[in-house]
Image (cartoon, rainbow, N blue to C red; front, side, top):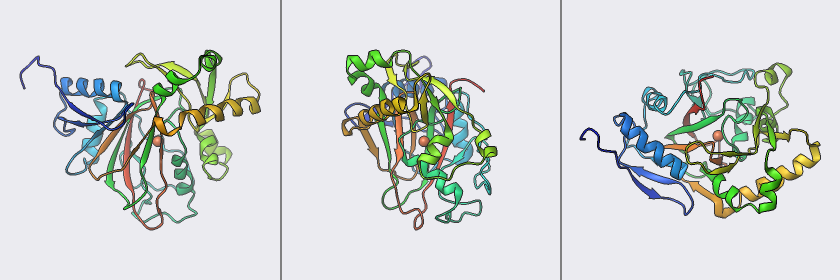
Length: 295
Ligand SMILES: [Fe+2]
């Protein structure tokens, strides 16, 4: 490649609003600043980018590329009783249904019950003060059916809100709690010690995306309330917004192939995993997460 020539990536659009498969970048070798800038430009445009690879990235390769996109989340595994780590890299969140010995979790394992909260619409780490920017999810093993990841384009959702709703949302601040979504997803009530590992965070319901300048509705199953609002009123508005945001025209559903890395923008989308037979099949997905700034 000639110095000074901008890198051009080929994007194949996967949905009429957003999401694209990207050709022309290998996350193992294309680690120069111009390749990374081109990928970030694509992410600001498409919000969800699929980067295929013949063979899954190693954990080290996955971490090394992620670090080029911004400060990374490191080992904030919530202290759930009995947690044994299978992937011993503090930057990687193990999103599999496997325990520390590589066996499928029992149906009633607390860790699996909490993981099932990923089947609710959410955006990663909104329960932190310093929000997640990009998540990079790498497919190592996928089940024969189910286990897709669905995304909603929250920029388009905002654009389409009625003006009266846009006015109503202006200036509102939501409270995000990790444990709120765990319990909503069918997990057990956390102990006081567990709860203390992740206190709630407050974020505006609407923000201007730093990369694209587009306005975004920023909600998730982690939202437990609206600052200054009575509970039932907040619940009503949040349910209405969640209903609007998850209508089929806004959704792209990704059917995984081994070796793919999906990079999505948490400040522009929501996502959820669809169910699969997690007692019969292995789904081995590993995630790194970049943050708005270093904690
Ligand atoms: Fe997630």
